[in-house]
Length: 116
Length: 116
DNA sequence: GCCGACTATAACGCTTCCGTAACAATCGGA
DNA sequence: TCCGATTGTTACGGAAGCGTTATAGTCGGC
Image 1: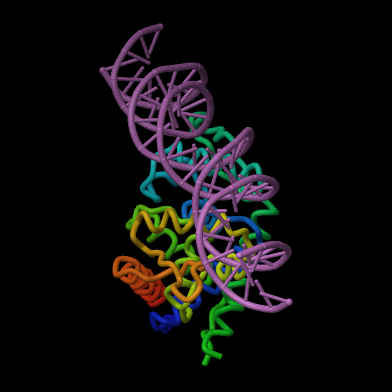
Image 2: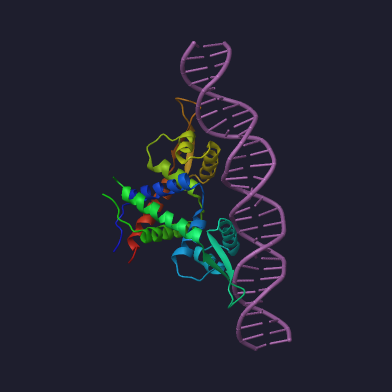
């Protein structure tokens, strides 16, 4: 199954959702931060700094800083990998799960309103 | 007509598109910046600093700074309103139109790939 | 013409992020 | 047991964003 979507609809959807994030949520996340957050919550663990850096095509300090920020907001947490102490495992949190869920609901709602 | 979309699909779509923006485009725009850009290109002109600030629920300097950045990248341009010289009209550019178009195509492409 | 209202921007001090480079800790094979 | 390779983090100077406040320019009713 696939989602049929014309470019104008796609852009309106994107606009409406990002506007919703800016207006209602107050936060102003960057594309990098959102990508990291959604990767951690949508893709199967474990997630490491190195893995995320490779996936996003950015350097490791970028990931470390993003995790610092989102960790401060309690959207993700970090834990040492006991099997290999060099690794850091990025974990989900209750607060982060709720936030991601809210984003999902927002997208669905705006999609439903499309061209109505 | 409306777009039927389940939360899991919606989130995967969002993830795939933002990942595409981060990986391929290199830029790292914030939600505010993207919202401003799409507003200018999707909604009927004229667009003013004050109008955008009200719409996004932020202060005017936030808009001015975002326009500085996106103007430097030639994604938008500014022009004085001749009818009321206090106003600044935000205008579209060729480069910006191509960029927005690219985003639209990216969303459509990722939507098509959904649950395939 | 004056003057309060309004527009956008500049200035301020502060915080956050950037990329590069250096770093400490850990692993694992010779 | 070394020692090169690997991991994540920190340090650095610089750029960009923040909110608040101040400012220059313009409008429009009186």
